[in-house]
Image (cartoon, rainbow, N blue to C red; front, top):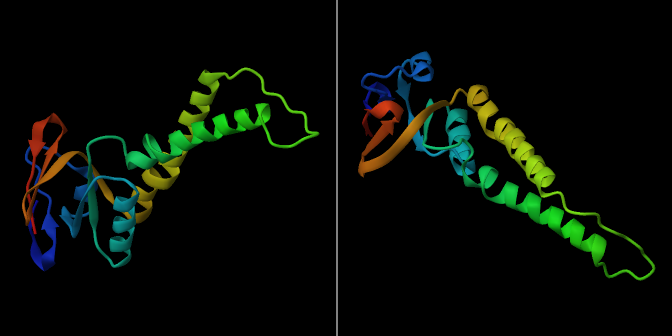
Length: 160
């Protein structure tokens, strides 16, 4: 990316078409590396101030929490807790039981929840807020330069 007028950055991706960026005239005010919860909070706030925003994501949109962290782990932990309480609870005079654990069904339910939340809380917000998503990696070259490396080995530089 390179500096453009009005303190904007112009996305220059050699040999690659970025349809979202073309839609926005190739100008962005903020380039965010990653697409987790903090990235979306910053993007939405920037959009509320009138900024055009692009994100660079190397993996699955949504970051750690929704994909491999908080949501899937707490879903399975909660299922385990419910099973444990059905077998061993502190209440006298209450009879409960737990059947066999069908791990495959629990994993499928967890996967469906992750996919639904990823779509609702991340993917759907891209169009709602006009945020461009670029697939690839990005790193800081120095304090004012970001170099994204896109799939198929295309690259660009951002100068702030």
